[in-house]
Image (cartoon, rainbow, N blue to C red):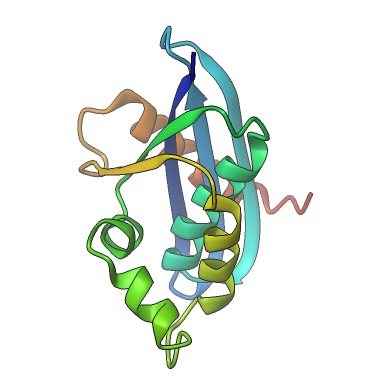
Amino acid sequence: MIGHYSIYTDGACSGNPGDGGIAYIIVNDENVIIKEFSRYFPNTTNNRMELLAVIFAIKSLSDKTYNFTIYSDSTYVVNAINKGWLEAWEKNGFLKRKNADLWKIFIDISKNRKIKFVWIKGHADNFYNKKCDLLAKEAIKSHKLY
């Protein structure tokens, strides 16, 4: 039987560009948090943080037999996947595309994985999204480089 994880991600930036933070929460089938993570990044942008949160979450799960549903309030990330923008960017060699370095990493780590992306309204009534937002903002305040 193939397992499933729900992954909630968020990125934040104080200024754009400015100090940034990422966070993710991974929840199993029983709705139990199995992993929570946040980290600070200096001199970055909000879109980089949103995408980097997804990358860090996927990289943290080495078991490729699990399916993922990634919930993000980033239309940049979700639309790039769900609307096929990423495929077009890749075909064009990421010509004049920001964050091409991160998108290439995403493509590499998402191969042979079943990942579904779902957009959720940010700062609404989703407990895990709110918690990710809080964790990302706390990471910015900490200025801790790991």
